[in-house]
Image 1 (tube, rainbow, N blue to C red):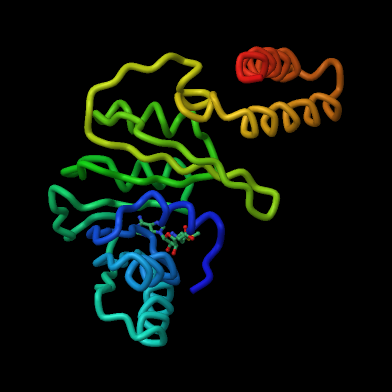
Image 2: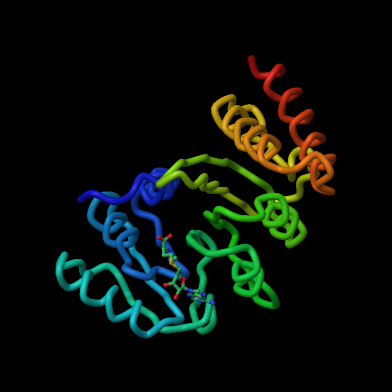
Length: 213
Ligand SMILES: C[S@@+](CC[C@H](N)C(=O)[O-])C[C@H]1O[C@@H](n2cnc3c(N)ncnc32)[C@H](O)[C@@H]1O
C-alpha cells in the first residue's frame, strides 16, 4: 500500500505489532498501513464526524479488522495502555497542546507538525518527556518534523529546542533551514524590525552548518 513519505516516516518509527492510538486520524491511511504492513492494532480517532466516516469507508475498503474508529476530542474516553504509542500528526502546536493538556499522558508519543517546532518541543518536554528521535521530511515544499517523545527526564539547551537535539546534527535539515532564512532576508526591507532576528538565526545556522561539515 502506498502512503505519503511523511506518513511512511511515522510508520517507520513504530515497531511492528504495536498498539497505536492515532489522534486526528482523518482518512486513517496511516492506521491501515500500520495494520497491513506492520501488524499493528490501531485506534483511529478524530473529532470530525465526516473525517471518521471517511476513515470507516477506507477501513472497509481495505478490509482491515484491527482498527477501531472512535469519534472523540483528542484522547477523551480512550484508554491508553502502558506500551501504547500515541500518534498526533498534521496539526498545529496549539491543537496539540489542547489535546495534551490536563489528562493522563501516554509513555510514548510520536508527534508530527510543520509549525512552531521550538514551542512544541518546549511544551512537550515541560510535560515530562525526552526526545528519543527526530525526523525531517519535505513534502510539497513544506518541511515537516516528526518527533518521538518518551516519558523521561531530560534537559535541553535553547539551541536544542530551536533546532532539535537530533536534527541540529542533520546537515540536510540545517542547510535547508539556512536557505529558507537567506531567502527571507533577501526579500525583507533593510529597515524591517525582523531583520536583526533573522540575521541572528542565520548566524546560528551557519555555526551549526560548520559543525556538521
Ligand atoms: C490535517 S488532518 C491530519 C490527518 C493525519 N493525521 C495526517 O497526518 O495526515 C488533521 C485531523 O485532525 C483532526 N483533529 C483536529 N483537532 C482534533 C482533536 N482535538 N481531536 C481529534 N482530532 C482532531 C481533524 O478533524 C483532522 O481530521
